Length: 499
Length: 132
Image (tube, rainbow over the protein chains, first blue to last red):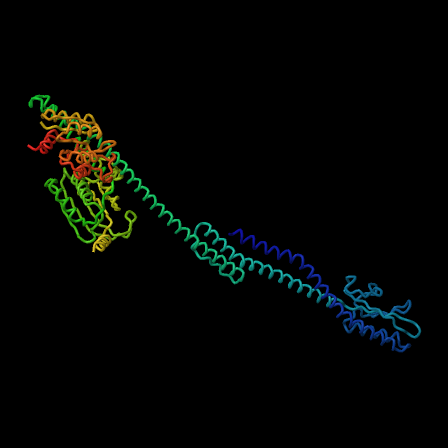
């Protein structure tokens, strides 16, 4: 920025200086010559006519009186002041004014050069007729005052030329500053824009029209840049959002597919298992029947039967999971009676140190799906909640209400029936929360749970077009929120179709 | 003495059922496919048929329909271990044991048993279907 100012100023000033260095001596010399010539003519012309007059007077003089008259005339001429030298030469005889301040020896011949010889005297000669002969009148005039005036005039010219040069340089400096200032601002603005700050207005106020126009055009360019920037930014944001949405959808779809394929696999395994368990159970029961009831063999066989029964109940749970991974005949139903029924079951199971609350509003809680699946969701969530509080006791609170979700990132916008199942149990760590909806993931001891409960819940909820979220804090408890799309519209359609 | 035909594509299952019923004093024959079951049915004319639902080629539901069309007086117990495969055309979405058995009941089975069942449940079902 400093360098720009300097270079611009220096350049403009040096250009002005070079021009002046070339022109000023010429100007000075030219003007001086004119002044000198003018003064010389002013000085010389009257002297010529004056000396002519004197020569005429001498010619008119009486021949007898001539020497005396000429002497008196020369003296009077010298006395008048302007003439510093006067003589008349008649052949070999020279008559010289006794009052001349210039000595006769220094007088020269017919010399009309002004300011010559350095004696500051200007000589004029006239040939004057005296009878039949010619005499020569020579007069010397004082050049001093005129020379002084010329010198003074030259000094004034020099002063004027120097003043003009100084003024030009000052103007050059001022002009460069006027031009440089907006350029410096422009440079700063360009630097800002390049640095990413496109939102500051360009302000190059200047009296120079071109600079104002430049500012106007650059400002329009900047505004266009801001507009383009904003458009690009919002486009990028939009793309990021839709990409996020797509990824989200893909993830959910993948999860569903995984659950469904696991369901199919589980169904196949369960079928085989049931076939294998049948002979185990029957043969061990036959053997038990054939054995004395109190012996060790009977005890062992009883254990085999019990193990087979446990295996049967495990396979049944896997089958239930498998079944629920496949879609059911959808129907519109109100959630409240289903949830109440499930809670009645839970109340029978949970110990006295766990309190069960139910808070429900009827509005907006009709959904489309299979009530038995929702029943299963409530049972699974409540079972988890109860198991989280089994040792410590606490409160199991279930809430049901209709909500309008404007879309908060996790849940798509729309009307939902919201089922909340909260406990005051041990809560979960973030690492656990990440996996809770995966099949066969369990934190319980071996044999206590299949690890299918929450993935069943997740599968059911997503198959109904809903979502499930979990909020948990270690030591404080966990709340699951199930959002099922409200089915009010479908209820109307159906009743309309029936009517 | 009542006679019983057991149809199951798993020989081990059929044999276990045969053992239980033979011990209880019934005359028991075992077939390992629906076709084999139909042939034995025509030969032996049993009082009761115990049939699996999910079997390759001809499945239990078809077998029940065919049996009843030929021998309307035969009594049928359907057994199933459920699962998600099999040539079941009936309610393809419903894959639970209960769904299979419900289909079997619709086809004409009087008693339904879920595999694996207890010996006592099997005997109780058989006795329920005998006239005296």
